[in-house]
Length: 68
Image (cartoon, rainbow, N blue to C red; front, side):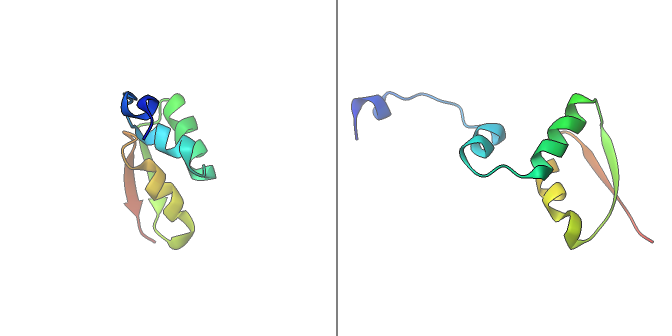
């Protein structure tokens, strides 16, 4: 290990992890909703929306699951 790596002092956040890995459209959607001040979204559960459920974790946006 080099000295540079030993002296590296960083804070790992959800955004920094997503920067280092593959970004999803769901992550861009949640960032846009946060910037717009959205606090709650209503959803129909299903596999088609699971990436959005994953992206909303830790975002401060509440998910309200509805049924039909």
